[in-house]
Image 1 (tube, helix red, strand yellow):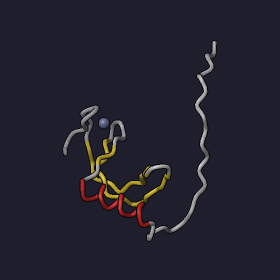
Image 2: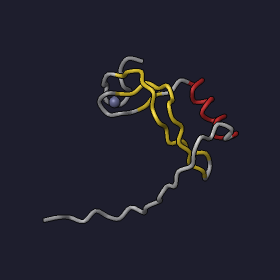
Image 3: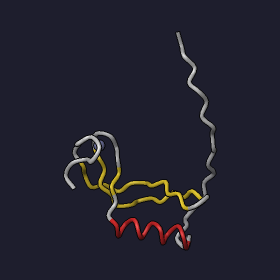
Length: 81
Ligand SMILES: [Zn+2]
């Protein structure tokens, strides 16, 4: 891939952190090879990489640490005059 699907920005290869949702669980996978749009930040993964991420969250064998995540409910924006 050379151009971003959404904004046509330039896409470069990069290692990124991914917030991966699996059912009710949310996991963070670090150091994932991806192609990232320099303009909008959209991340693209190859099917192999995606499959690997799925396996990692299913087995959790490679868990290196645990972090707490706050869940916040969005409120309607307050209009500032
Ligand atoms: Zn983009």
